[in-house]
Image (cartoon, rainbow, N blue to C red; front, top):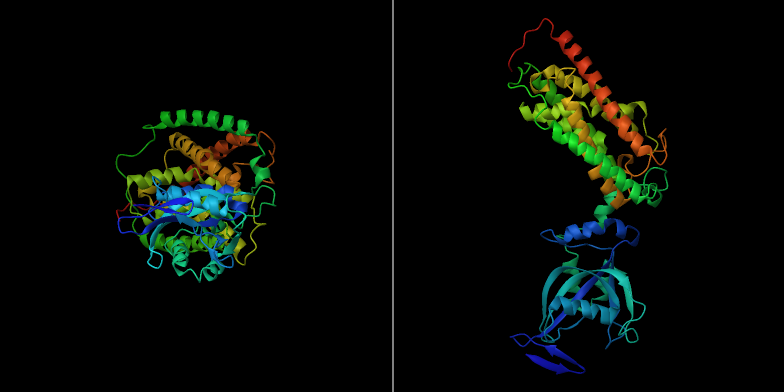
Length: 441
């Protein structure tokens, strides 16, 4: 059904209710909007895709200038509700943006209307718009907007639905992820760090190095040495394994708590924390050939934690016990967990010293993780994850070619430290079990 109303044509549904559409307009934190817009896209495709913003846009009522309302209006013939919602927002509020989830259809029996309401993330505010003379637009906090809409209870329901607990608070998530990262500190991130290298140089380095790494990875497939049968697992190591698992989980849990408290959760993706998670996995799961593979890869990742011990970076750790946690975690990673695991034997046996297949495979995996995962993520968030965007302040090779140099010395350190651990590990096991026969647990 179609009905003329003033200068416009309004449509009605089969029940005689006027068809309307509108948007609850939100504005995210402007400073972080560019960096976390990818989270908005992610939220859009989740089962309950929504964004809980900081501020809400309301406009003054054309009939009652002292009242505030949500931008909305009638659906015209041949128009979809979401198209009408976007059009009304441009006409009445003079803003454009990204249309989010559908909040639902709200029925108002008082004026015989049903309004389809959507979320809109505002990305542009027009200086002039169709109804700029008769209306005022203004941003309010969510709590203020609820008060302003108290005389429009059915529109207040739009806002309550949009801010319901089932929604994803993207601003909060991004704040916890990297909100505490101090970009004024050299090497932490920010635009200066992003622009340390030109996009062309960064792309060429990544493509060339990863092409070589992919070729090496392809050559290594099927060549790594895996024993047909696992060696006997040592009897009596179960209790020690559980105790060490509890200790490592406790220390790592405290470190995770610090990252949440300082709003730097993103740094949990750095290699030392990944190695800690791998060691927790090795201590927790039963023996298998998969565990053996993970263990041998993990051995060649220990060089990073050793570097963190030799060249500690603790100047940004300001909370009580935070520095102590740093040292405990890295000592456990390098000196305690690996040597305990090799005493257990079973899947924790070391390959022969002259077997370089596991070292080479680990080099390729580490390269993929650094340049194909940490680098893009760091570029999006402007956070210098493991110095993939710009060199650390203490980097002796700081300069436009620091990454090329790192692509040489990092694999060298990986092979060197890994093989030193392999040699020491073989001698340690031989000395420890020289007079003890192997027993099945």
